[in-house]
Amino acid sequence: MVLNDQRCTCGKLLFKGNFSGQIEIKCLRCGQIKSFSGLEEIGSSVNELS
Image 1 (tube, helix red, strand yellow):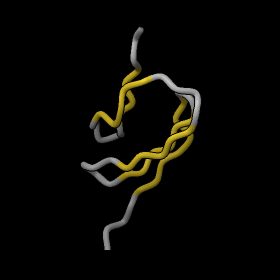
Image 2 (cartoon, rainbow, N blue to C red):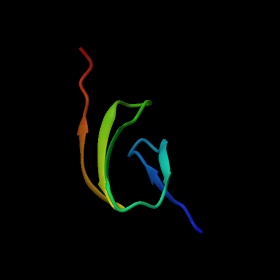
Image 3 (cartoon, rainbow, N blue to C red):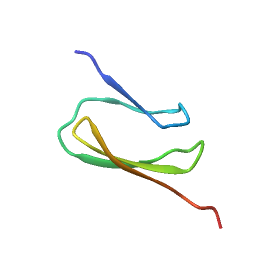
């Protein structure tokens, strides 16, 4: 079985895997929040530091 890499725009590996649900994950390097549905990226946002 081949696991797909999902990376942030900064290049950090967010996770590897195959799934059919939805996930939202925050990059620990740059703070950007990425949303995935199945294997497609459905959105991203930048987390502002306060």
